[in-house]
Image 1: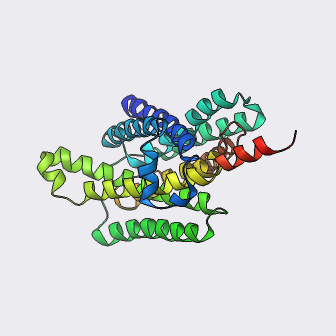
Image 2: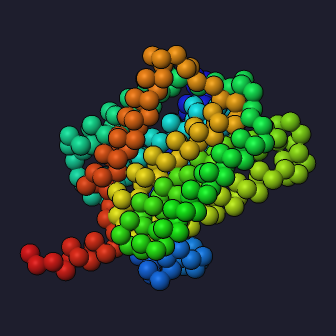
Image 3: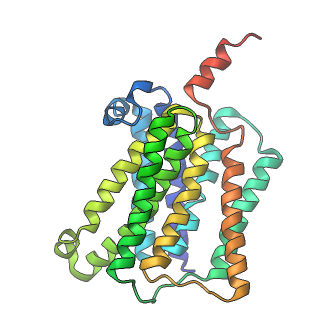
Length: 296
């Protein structure tokens, strides 16, 4: 694995993790009437902490794009999932909660899962890219699934909505990462003219804004521990599906490698859930009000 890709991807994960915590700290104070409406983003723009979180997120996306330009989606996506480690570090500083058995178990599972998947799968490029039919089929399934989850979330409101919205955003961000790589390839082949004559950069922007609205709505209505694990688990799975499905990424497919790849992905998901549910993760505004109003 190229060292530069590792440094860029982990740096991107650091910025994303810090950005998510700052965004949720601000979004949990937004009016619930803004749920899943563009007005939510307009209200959040007035909050300095949210803007700082967006700044970190943009830095993370730029670093992630650079990593995707030099490495395969199937390699970069598991590394980006480590953003939850950095989110937990910042949250621990705020809540002063010890890691404990749950935190250490989640950390080891996430780190071990990322290592197992990369070592066993040995993600690499060079495969033939899929034709337009499979290309659009995979993108359609991801985007269609995200829209369906968002519609279900709008109906369920404050019950399962945060998890549904986070999964939907993760699916969109996974597709966005894949199209970011395609955009980088177009830019490398023909410069700005080649880049902006394709539909991919515009799709990247649209997916980014839509995903941002879904994530902020999830952050607004529930603790970070309910939304961030689902987001962090869904994004690499969607990105890997796109990378292998239509970008020509290749993984080892012998029986032993497939078993370790599956175990690695399972470790990533379980580790993400354990870390995301850790008590150090900040709560929602509603939870804070309940805590302050409850009798001692």
